[in-house]
Length: 170
Image 1 (cartoon, helix red, strand yellow):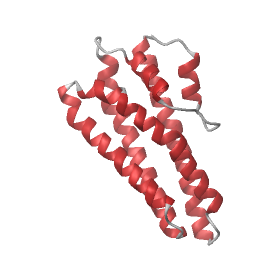
Image 2 (cartoon, rainbow, N blue to C red):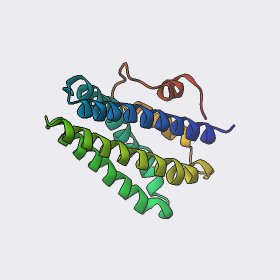
Image 3 (cartoon, one colour):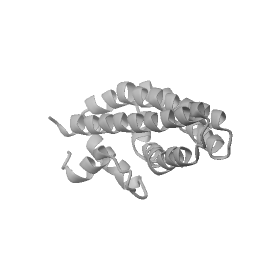
Image 4 (spheres, rainbow, N blue to C red):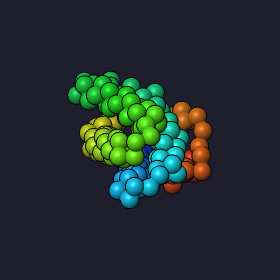
């Protein structure tokens, strides 16, 4: 397996883990809201995950992966829309952060999750393949640069991120 394929596979795996983790946290908020119980711990877990994992990942993409993708004319408009989706995710995060209404928090957390799930799918299916298949693109180096652009790793660090730092790719 070449370095670009391995790097794409690691990012796809990492996206799947983030989708799964975010889904679990959003579903916990919905379940708590349905039961009429306080969302304090579930809300804190959801917001911490978005703040510590999702946001740094998005910002790292914008510094590394997206500029490389935007150099390809067929991806330029898509990259712009992906950055717009990052801003919408941040807006939803802030809305959730400042709300105490359980139903509202659960609904907006679900919206954030759905937006991220669609976003990750587009990245996996529309951005990564052209970069992976381009012999002039070193996707493995871009993934390494993404990893370095993430300011810190927390206890919520995912297996895919760990693999990127432990495996030699390229």
